[in-house]
Length: 295
Image 1 (spheres, rainbow, N blue to C red):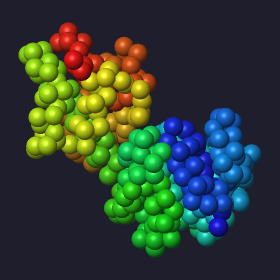
Image 2 (tube, helix red, strand yellow):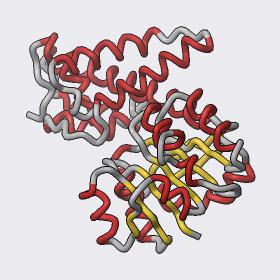
Image 3 (spheres, helix red, strand yellow):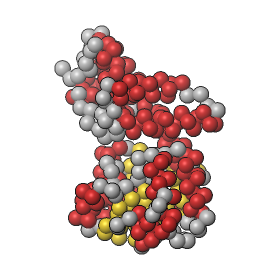
Image 4 (cartoon, rainbow, N blue to C red):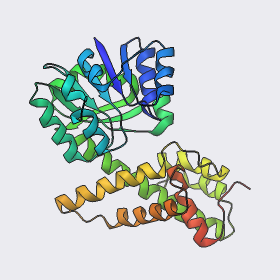
């Protein structure tokens, strides 16, 4: 069985490397040739086009920035649809609008190809160590066929419903993460401005009800002033845009998400769009004229 992997970015490259380490027969494609070289140096085969990946691979994995990129890769010129044949499986691991997942699934079904939307959570660190959380939408029969492959890249792999459900779940995840980071930011800026050591506050509350995976992951980096991206603000903006669009389509007000979106947009204007999303705290620090750092 040959696996095709399209999209070797900050997340896709380590995910593909983990598949290669697991001794899967891997065919890769990306427009950034240096990323392709990392995989070929690890023993993967390079394809000259997306179409070639679809022709040669039995299972095609895509890890792309947003909905338009997925549409281009699957339905564009020399794309997946032009090369794929009946009986194959496409798994899109990108975080995109659920409606686009459903649209791509319909196009592929017309060619006898099964489709899963399987976005991930965990950022680059968990992509590297193979402990991502997969949220999968699609037929259970198809899911069972590829569950072992996803488990190579993930610490948890969960089928949540029909096609599109994976990306709905990812949007819910991204709302919770964004609001959690904003809450941590507000609280720690308050504590620091009031003269209390933020590291002491962190240590005092992390074991209680306010404790969270987000708090434990982001607070040590905030104390160091380290906003090197694990997950960039500009990508979280993209996810919240998809969340707002989807929420409006189904008639759900999400006012807190709208507020955090505007905070992120303000940071983007200030040139922080490539910072880690933990850098949300910089908005609050600027307003309060204080830095939340280790003393």
